[in-house]
Length: 253
Length: 262
Figure 1 (cartoon, rainbow over the protein chains, first blue to last red):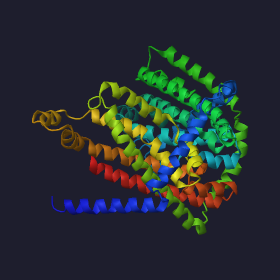
Figure 2: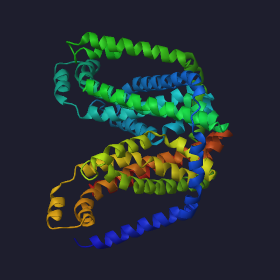
Figure 3: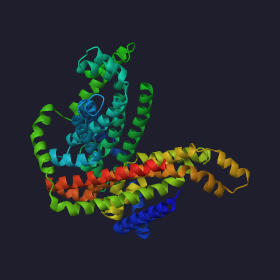
Figure 4: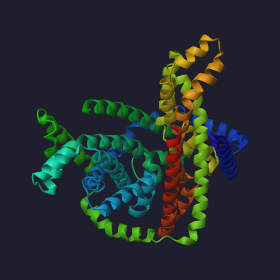
């Protein structure tokens, strides 16, 4: 292939330039990085043994964390329904409406969940409410985007049949679209719920409630042994829920 | 509720199951809503304020554009170097954890280690690295680097497990050394997929890098935190706009490159 070698050379040069720019910009020299590592490892050494005395005090924040994830996911999934229909070309005939819905979903998805949380903490104040709103927006965007893509791939037969028989829009959606798309919708919602549980644990680091807020306080007060307990509890819950979710999805499929 | 009526054409025989599932879910939802003290009234009463703030953010303060772009450039650097560090850590671990290349004795612990790294939240790592390296982008880079060896490492290992054993056996049959088998039979088979996975990770890390500044790990998040503290919504708007544009550009470029690779 002519020019393949030139293209490779240009690519390598561009990559080298990108790295040179990044290393110089951050002053990320190996010696600097190496010097910080012992301090990082000492932090972990300071954390053992975990302070198990705080375990009873973790129950309430943990429950609140799971509630944030549950409410945020549910609200997002409910609000996603109209957007799923609007962002699917085979349901929404108006190209403007379709493009607007698609554009909105893409825009919402570029902003990371923790950024929503930080902004909403500034709007509604510190606490779980900001976290719920952040998860609602993020879940809405992801569920609507994924489900509308599945919706565009459904079998058009039932849709056409109902339309030919003179069914109105609502009935067509109810009997031709919903039965075909419901399993995808439910499994994406479950997938997002899993992500949201992970996120809900760290929402507190930006002030949006849950057990992350307890961790943040412990870290600010240099109570590293308590911090380790909280981290271990978080990891344990995430691992248990991951395993449970895999089983649930196998059961649904 | 919506799901209840729609469940019936799907699973006619197990209809009661759908109802039972729905009942369990509704109970959990009501319990959760009461626990976090959300109410429709609170949502509605907040709407005018939210609309006003959104209006302010939609009119970005252009005088901050330069500073926002500079902050985003740092975040991109953090993402590039962090992803590279993650790849460098994941590369050897992937071979250790792959069933066909590593030994069974190393494969299981290797996978468990990758899983553990994957589960440990990035932003908590960032808090620790900020404590170790001081506030700034280096802490963000280290956090992203360590965290993003987990998931890609697991995916790399899965790629290694699906390679064609033919070339390996052929080279072994002609008496090639272990290194040569690796270099000429394994590496060419896995490299394009490794690169594609790493590019995908770069897309995720560009988002992460813009967030980590919220805990002091540098980049555009630092600017955003200050703007939020002083309720400068028009500056928040500028920063968000820069993040959205940069993330979209990176996504597009990375997707185009990935299409060429695999």
